[in-house]
Length: 346
Image 1 (cartoon, helix red, strand yellow):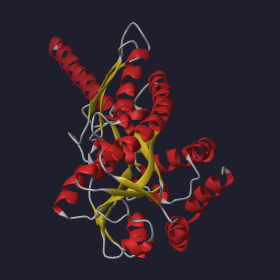
Image 2 (tube, rainbow, N blue to C red):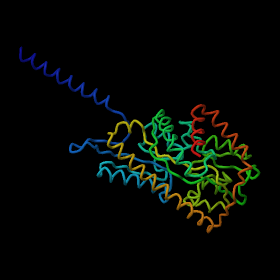
Image 3 (cartoon, rainbow, N blue to C red):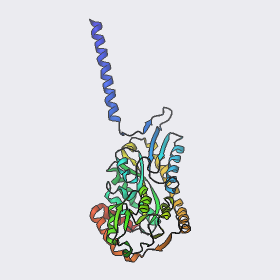
Image 4 (cartoon, rainbow, N blue to C red):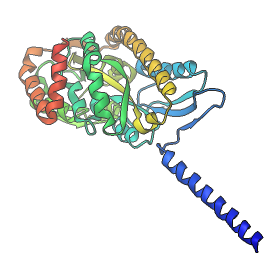
């Protein structure tokens, strides 16, 4: 009988240990993605396997910047941090990226900053024509903007770790360049955010929402008469096959690399530091590359028959003031803070 009770006690004890172990595992789970992390017994740095999704053509300089980021992370971690890149919308289109990142469907995601507007309303400042040049952009991010957006993004489950210069935005069009509001009249124009759509409406055009992957087809089929992008985007997606004019510059294109915040918080401090260091170096490379690519793209567009006409900036001054006022009204204190930082770093 004593043996029976002893055996019963051992069985119950084993069951309790299994239950406690199972509960501890549940509490330790932070991310529900396919990413994996495992601790190496010989080092404090864990092995990390994650995915990075974007919608850009692989030959575009920003795409190469993310390849460099992944290579640097692997190199600096002695092969323990492996980031697999899925380009050209293989996993998600740019318009779907915010949902994919915040819900943990993908660990790292890339898209233009204004496409985060539905999650982070203040992000739409990037469509405002309020920067003097990219030196001004960098000064603003180094002196407050980055901190503002880290705080705003983490509220929705994401975290920006790298900002890329995409180049100033221009409107590509057929036969008639959009140099003033008069040329916007009656035109169907591809936009990427509500505020940009409002800008087009105020100028007299009709905004159309398309992902980056759909623009060329839209131009070919007449779904849109004009589309906004950087000149590098014009060449990479061969806009010159369907347009022959472009005008600008309008706003400074800013592309964000964001990471799912729960995944990020599940990494060790050492892994985070390596990834941030890799992102910083890749960002610097992309900045210098953007300048070269911009010049090369302009030459190529000229060779392909696309003619540039300078924007009549003064003709848009009232529209610009209206969209800035709308932005501040929509975003309140945080929006005004962003405008103040931009003005103070001019």
